[in-house]
Length: 318
Image (cartoon, rainbow, N blue to C red; front, side, top):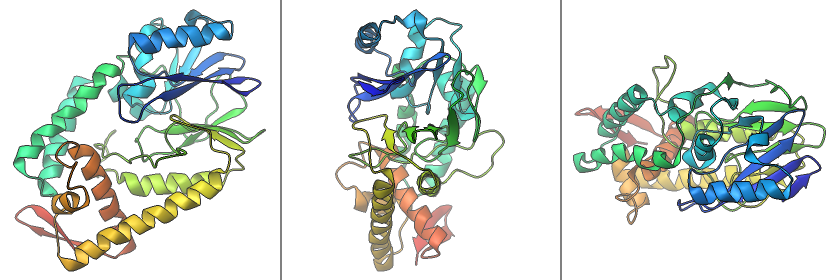
């Protein structure tokens, strides 16, 4: 699908509940693929077909930019030539290279965190499930790391904006000339992306608070003159500021629903999670705990709740 004279959308099926994923081709001074779909032969054949419609083959791609490290956005990088330049935020690196030492410490981080948050021992083992989806990811390394305000070689009109929250590695690309944003999963038309718990990196000692980060990232987009956001999943967004205000309002409503629960009875995060997601918390402990911790972080930041520590567990109370 043509987005503008020099930007084209590719869509691939995925094995994930989120459904199809989008990637983008930019005809800049350097032919650039932004995001790379999921690692399946079906997605690769689809990429070949969609490139052919534009008169290209995969070997014509001169560089790849990734909005974040999740497998459905990086998997097909493994199908490209080994010397393809790969550009993204530095926090992509341990995920896309599937660094074993990082994953070992990652798992220990979740064991310790989930124990503090009151999760029952039988569910702690599910932290290793993080690796299950990585078979659809890649084993590559960044060749260039970019951060806030950087301009990528060959894409002189595009500016990098850091938007952590959904992932610590998340960036968007912004073109001021026409207000076009290539937004990854930062803002989606039909659903609100789940800010996911991740371990600290690069010497950080405090865990990230992804929902607070995500809200700040949304507010950062409000400062931009945006005409359209092309997204990692689903439809383009034509009224981004309106949707951002809607998302922030809905977020506050969800948090205050959690507050009513805490008012009734002080709880651990896991007890809160079981009450919020009674049917799915056992199947999706990381997703549901990420959502729950996000709401609790939000309320703590507002001063609505506090934490007491009892037998090594955090108890949230008003």
